Length: 175
Image (cartoon, rainbow, N blue to C red; front, side, top):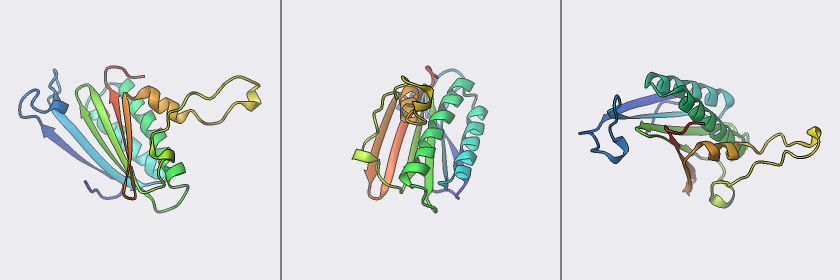
């Protein structure tokens, strides 16, 4: 799905009947699947702008504030990792984000043309040790643990020269 850089393309898909589409199981007050897609520069400003737009759209669909906070936090970590590690500060990179909101979950998919993830796999991490003197505590290393803690499932594939990363966030168990 293509979009003008920095803009969100949005579509609502009606389920033919409640339960007709496995991803669109009807529940009271929600009878359609919502999809949005955005493409933006892999910069701090690009990430910040896309997160603000995504948050605004989720608010418009009455997603509870706790889930919005989880989505925003997870996507901020993922998108900043793409900028910092996949593109290694290289200018001109683009990021595509697609998001689907359906009963019970939010599905997010990112695509970038940066370096592949180490080992061509989602990093499985543990919290860095917080033992020891304050001045020796790590500054980073918390991002992937946070992403794992707030998502139900993650998937990564390198297809051609593009990274494809997907994650699922349960609506029933935010933060």
